[in-house]
Image (cartoon, rainbow over all chains, first blue to last red; front, top):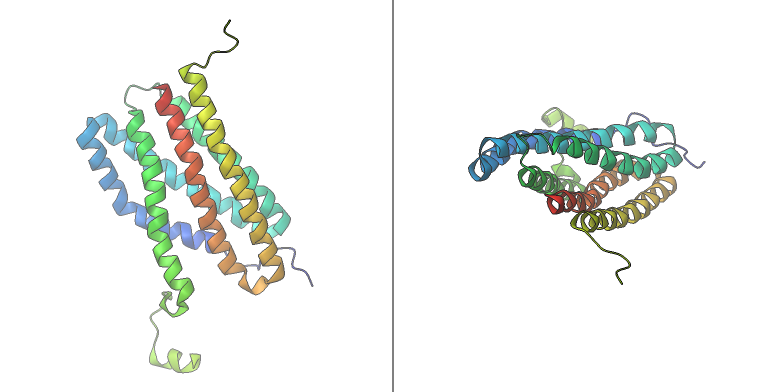
Length: 153
Length: 75
């Protein structure tokens, strides 16, 4: 039978985004500090907004794909394409509204958006590529015991 | 006679448009192939969706670059 929806209960997107957000926690202060060095307080605030926008964008992408995947594969296709347009449009609108504020430093905001997005993805890619090539490396929620290892064999 | 003139804002908008066009094609192709893979091999759906999500995020970075260039070009 041809499957019409992704298997229920699976949401690898949430796992990925959760991991990305955990990695973003130590990255955010670094981005803010670097922006503060080059552009002062305005730069720091703008970098903070940039990191928040990247996190929100990834979270929205994951939520929409998981929701669509549970309904049908056709909807997944539509939501992936439509979601891209909507999210880029939303980002455009937010930055358009923010750019006239006194405390927004556009170069800091823009560079933080691109560098944080790409940096987090490359960081995550290293982990994902390792766990896909060697599934044994994938961490489990509970530490493996001798008995669970025996059962697995 | 000048038929058209490209201003800084117009050039920035053109950059944004071209910057959003490529990723749109890329995401369409990427998700299409991923859906096909999930339909053929449902047991590999988890792996396919993981790589699909990462692919979408990477392709989106291109659009983000065009988007940032638009705002920096205007400033």
